Length: 290
Ligand SMILES: NC(=O)c1ccc[n+]([C@@H]2O[C@H](COP(=O)([O-])OP(=O)(O)OC[C@H]3O[C@@H](n4cnc5c(N)ncnc54)[C@H](OP(=O)(O)O)[C@@H]3O)[C@@H](O)[C@H]2O)c1
Image 1 (tube, rainbow, N blue to C red):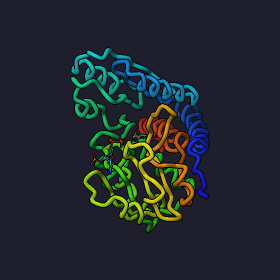
Image 2: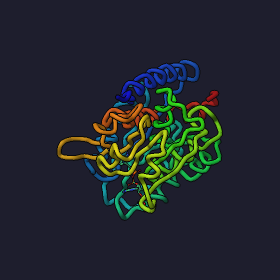
Image 3: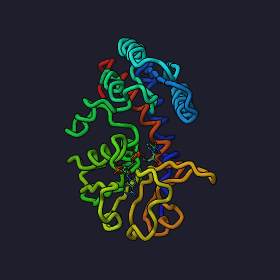
Image 4: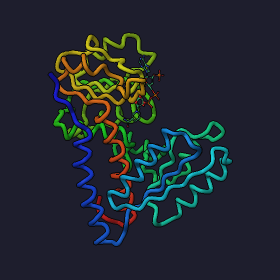
């Protein structure tokens, strides 16, 4: 029977640590870390995500500025908004909620955010630094996964890690982070699987740590893992019966040594890592040690 890695509990602890840091920045430098969230259109799920980010800013005593723009806004006007936020000294982090409407070039928008305020960690400069092992801002979900592994006491040094999924926001960055040389939360041997992988089960069965970000409900079943595996389920799939992950939790937990639940696993970590990146950006701005 597996240990359940409770992301919601771990996230709560990190939140308290951040609160202390934010209080320190305010008393030492008179700076309040500020996050701007940009929402284009009125996609319901995006509204919920942005609302949750604003709420957490408030809870932590951070400044938050929300910018709502109509779905048909021309791309150049969105670029003007980002340029304004890039210049605003009260804003340390800028988050453009994805997905953007189809007439807007997502890459062009993400590249317009100045890298020192790119708290999502999606700018090529930040992804390049991640790959080189000198990161400034790690993308939030992979950073949350790494932190979960560290805080749950899961040894990555020398481990066989298998990642299912190669997206730019989860699969590719987490694989790159885990192959870095540092022994804490990295130094693993990593295999990345995707739809071109010939025999997925061959790989998943070899994993000491299996990270699944495929966007397929209950896709990983007990016959695909070995006894004693650690499973990190990134998937968030909305079914009529509720939220489920990419892993068939009930059967896999019988074989796993440890496993994250959905909800309450990776999800709560992602948003806290966004706050951590914003605090980091404010400290960089203030010239404080990181
Ligand atoms: N908890 C959080 O905070 C959080 C954050 C981000 C995402 N998510 C969730 O995580 C999941 C993945 O998100 P994403 O943005 O990384 O997804 P994505 O962009 O849709 O990518 C899915 C990846 O999984 C691979 N894949 C899909 N079906 C597969 C199969 N049958 N066999 C092998 N590989 C397969 C795809 O391969 P190809 O590249 O070959 O198509 C792709 O690389 C989603 O459920 C999403 O909602 C959660």
